[in-house]
Length: 382
Image (cartoon, rainbow, N blue to C red; front, side):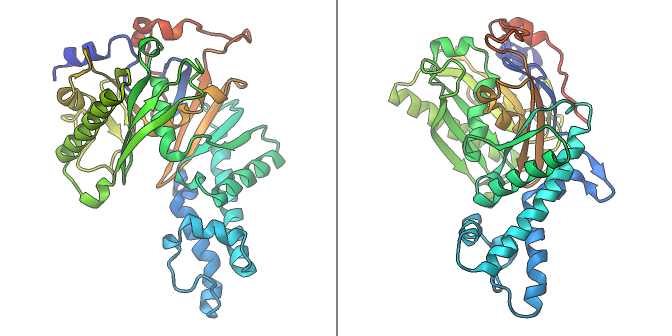
């Protein structure tokens, strides 16, 4: 697809990886901070917690008293660990609590480093998402991290993301779309791409119930574990196109007024033209190639939705997951998101449209699509 065709399909909406979105400015995303041990995010990832758990099991394993037996630490399910926290085996529970404490100390260290960067200055609240959050042990680690930071006089709230982590990246896609879409349509298509899975969903706006999209929800989603199939890049795009077409058919059959808009959450640094600068190494094939453009490829496969040309907007997956929290962050000005998964996703936002509090910086921003499209991307892509 020619560049002028791609621009044509996105007229009236923000550009890919935009620093200016309908309700927020994206101050930074995908920051990679290093210390002497490597990337900082690796200290507060899902894998890091498992390593800490294993470390606490080691002395008991030597004496043959490990309550977890021979099961590898990375194979123990979150459900099992949650059950142990409230179970009768005090030794096993103590191991898990010890691991939570150590992980919280690591997360607090990492959060401290983020808060000291220019992009994260004056952050008032941090939402924590990702798969790790979807567990009691994750919630305890988040709460403990907040207590550690407050004891050090950091005036920061840390809260688990409200939407289920599997759905937050789909619901957040609504906040990539301009408000004119919601006037005539009741749903959009959303895609959440990860290193293991690709999830597609039909997201209901429920805009008539709540103009701030706080009532939005996923009507139906489909999951593909691409890591199991090891497809080529082209094979992955073909499968993704097929999944989206299936949802379009279902939406038509159910009588949805589906918008001609697809919001995509994707790992890495997303360029304005829809290419990926870096950070997509876990995806099938080379997604960072200058010859590959996912939005353009999808528009070729799905040129229209209903009677209208398809518009696509792609942004970093941490940004999109964080955007699901926009309706619930209106009592602060600056807030961030950390997503704990294979790595540590991150994004920082400043609210731009705040209803009725005198701090409205651009009340008509969502109505002025053309102006938004010309805004420069202020994302910190370091």
